[in-house]
Length: 186
Length: 428
Image (cartoon, rainbow over all chains, first blue to last red; front, side):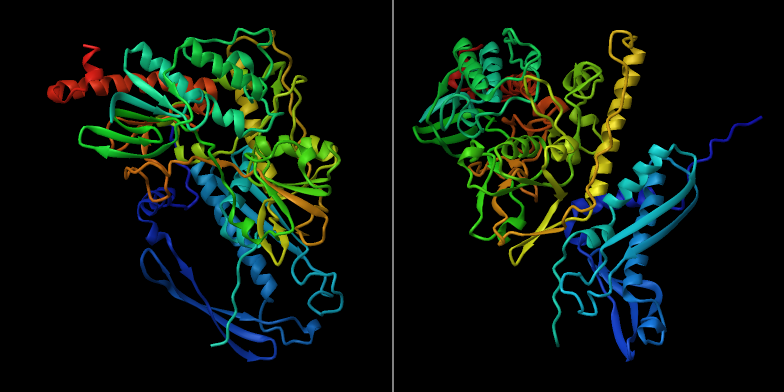
């Protein structure tokens, strides 16, 4: 009988990430990234955004392909519902970011994941965006992200994985902390 | 100009410990301080402050705690008295009221320019400490001028604060201690909580520092720590030294009425905005505390001490009030004072030797400054071990670095016999 010690593989190249951390600490200018998207209004509340390239590692970088996103509002908002709402894209961004972090942190900690599913909900009082109540903010009042994880690890270890993935998440930081936003007319 | 083999800058616990170690090795030296012995302890600490470490742990080279309260926590006035006594005991060659203006490289060592003149030295020890200046976040720029702002270096007691609410920014040792003290004075306190280290004051009947030492954590060497940068920037644990040995954590502060909010992100148009990550920040701290308590329990079992110690237990998770505000208008009059308990940074601005990295930190290998043979750094967090942050750890570091300094001087004499200083010649 042979005992095989199967290495943990969540499909995350942790060594590459650790190498990048070392390399970028030594060359801080290469760590400066600019992410971008472009948007064209179609009609009504419908717009199409495109993501194709970004700047980082001291050069212009390209996605493997161009990604398009239809943004619209649902029919109950008297719109045509050609795509997800902007706030749903925020939820998609947040859950995608923290889920990627779960895989990476689990890999780093030697935890083999079998399945990870998540649901994310953002609570919003639309009286804010309708301008109907000045006491109500436009954005989410709160966001609830729930993970179901099947893995060879204790509940405490998994709690630590999702805590660490929040700590290292860009979108979690963007959503929970103020960011300076400038909007100009060119 | 005078010649001295070594100059120690700073006559606090670290500088005095180094002085004693140099004297033991017959290395001619002088200790310079801008004020008196223990100047920072004397002038830049609030009077009710006590050490985080228990008295039995407050050791200096050749000097153990000999008082009648080994399990107590030394008030800052007693720290000053102890260090002053120690300076006399070891006959430390201290020049007080002598401010160092610059230290620069010289052909055979260093030039130390101070108020009282120029000294040339083969070795210089930077022992001015890690807490010379308050580290204040950029968010401070937006605080309206109507607000009184203080740092732990200028805070004395709550009675000197204006009436009204106080926003304490930072929930490490300083922040939780001062939040509690100010809140008890009748000024309602809001505590902005970022990343922190939660630890109970005592566990299973023993002080937490007993456990940190017993489990070997404090002795972990700098070159064995995975993420040394992180370890060196870790906030001080949420601890307070009181005669009652009470634990002060966010739950106890909240129960006293302190309002807990997230990390201060920005102040925009007079409105302070707090991070929505408070729940995760607290979850991380709870998990980390429990990991240490697990390690402590495993150590106790392995060491066969379970019968001697009280049974293991766990602390309630940090409770977050779901109504915690994400913003407070600092122009509303609700808050009259902001206290920046956001940490400290060293002040080596007078060091005119290019030994800093791009973030402005002095590059060093366990206190041996990189690229400047004969230059040493002392009294910094996790300098050589995790204990370095505390008085006894800085004292142990002094022993190690004094040994290195001694070897350095010997190697200098071997390679440049003609360049030996008069002071060094005496020791042959």
